[in-house]
Length: 300
Image 1 (cartoon, rainbow, N blue to C red):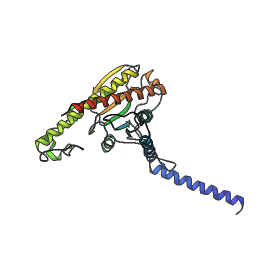
Image 2: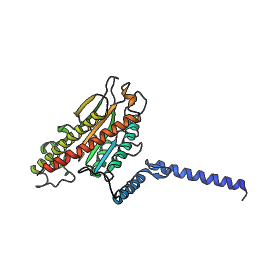
Image 3: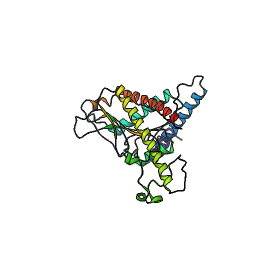
Image 4: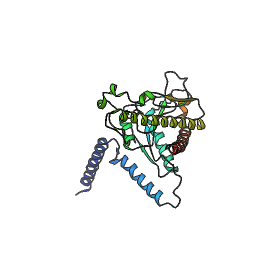
């Protein structure tokens, strides 16, 4: 084979390989150059856990929080807000989630941190909650940045569900076993006959306890922001957020700043601001873990 023919064959082989790789990447939204990103993350976590378990001084530990689910808001077709800096919210939340994940695992190597998305892909609100439930998370943080129709709104705030959105309707409204909340709560050992009043009462008590813990988590997040962000404290609020409905664990929506504010909208894209948000959320997790330990110890 002459050199020219060999070069043509090599070029054709490389071209076919690139085509197959690109088709593989398109077939799986988490694949890049034929590599599945979620698999890489899982392997990296296994290596981290192996190093942690073999270490002489394994590092700090949390008492009750062992699995954390981070939900980078928006993604894929849903850009979220676009602020004064021209950066899409979906990119900022993903960047924040990765940095927060690294910070948590650097300080608490045995804590499992799962993200609802690891790349720029579309994900429905029920899918995010479902992933958190499947992971049996102890904490669910949905990460967002805020926006307003005017440029005067500024500050940070944290949301959890309203009581009416946590507690199911009475059996006669739900239609008994045909209602949305008729299936048992995962992890709950229900007593009595299926469909009787005792079952619904127990479910209400479980949800009420979860709602109280979500409130504690929200206040922990807001306290963390207050200690690290030089902005306006807009407080803890309750709202009917779809990304929180159906969660089996303490769950909140975090709004780390306004993209539409002339100054804050420029600050939030900076590394220094992101690090302050990470520090605030890490403090919030630690404080909530201590509260959770006390609450559970006080229970009979």
